[in-house]
Amino acid sequence: MDLSNENVVHVKKNGIEYIQFKKLLEYEDILTHCFTLKPLDFGDNSNYEEKKDIVIKNYKTICNELNIDYKNIVRPYQTHTNNVKELGEDFGIFLDENKDIDGFITNKRNKILSLTYADCTPIYLFDPVKKAIGNIHSGWQGTVKKIAKKSIEKMIQVYNSNPENIICVIGPTIRRCHFEVEDDVKDIFLKEFEDIKDIITKGEIKESKQKYYIDTVKINKRMLMEMGICEENIIDCGICSVCNSELIHSYRKEGKTAGRNTALIMLK
Image 1 (cartoon, rainbow, N blue to C red):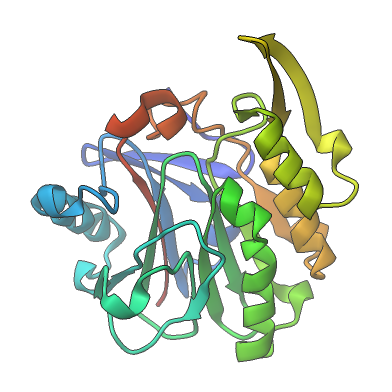
Image 2 (image 1 turned 135 degrees about the vertical axis):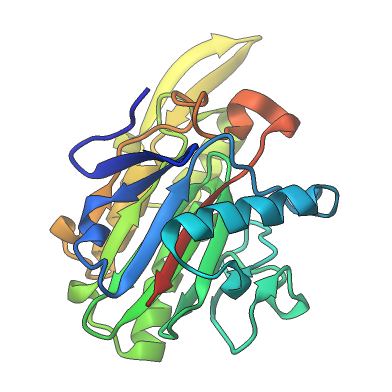
């Protein structure tokens, strides 16, 4: 199975697999990035301690492949907030000061931003003019809380970024085809966003409950464009994590047994 497409390169090398994005590879002289695939697993908040040895081994494996030092990993304790933080001097996994953080931005070199995903939307940010990056975890709750908007606001505030220069890459995530919800979640989206009725599709009635399908990727794209990001600078990989759960950890498909993929991005 190969996930390569017009925007994506599927790398199979040295017994591991990951994807990279062609747009970001244009800047590989100053930027390193990837999105990991199975069998690599990076654990979640609840099981990291019991999986710690495996997770560290997997970080070493992918970082060696990318020729970067795993000791420079910075990973927050993600809790579906809209909190975006400028990275400080510290690095490590689950540091106390990085609790309840779902997005990092930085202009520091050799700091590996690592966030984890199992259907939630990864958003990579790169400002090639100001030499700044971001790594954003936008699940449906983060999307409702407009974390993508907050991350662009943060880059403007901290780095004086011009939104027209920022490149946004959307990684593998649950797509409309599998993001099935009921009235409660549908109503939350309708309350927070205007003019998205075309993004919500009515599905079947199951067990006397009306189902709906929501396109959170399209919502994030609109949000980014409203912040001034150029449409041509929003690159969507087009990959559904549920449709491709043979290669991508998916909570919707695998439930509590699901592992976690990681998105990595680093300035050289």
